Image (cartoon, rainbow, N blue to C red; front, top):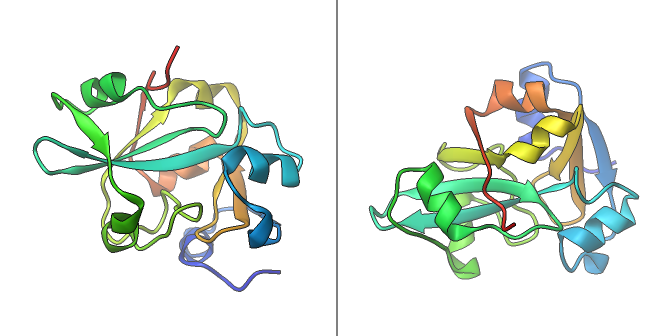
Length: 157
């Protein structure tokens, strides 16, 4: 079992049940591959994307690993004229996480967080556990308890 990450410590502190999936980080090249390695449905396995708006504010978007973020829909969801993905090199300083290990839980700061509406179709979803190769399965209601989630249609059609 993996050593505890910030994600797990936060969930433990809030007494939230979760299941851990761990795979060799060297095998993880993207979210879809990770989903295959843990035998999960890519529609219910979510990735965390971080953007920056024209206002210079950061925003977090959570979408299925097999989908792409629609930047126009994302901007509309957070009341910005435009948002753009932050460079991978900035991810650690902004969130405390690295590419492929970024979780919406336990970031350095709590940013406005939007999850795609499709998440409501699942009792449980899988998100990053805070490091490459580590995934956490939990109920959407429990994720809502940790994050102030906003639900919007933010993926490309």
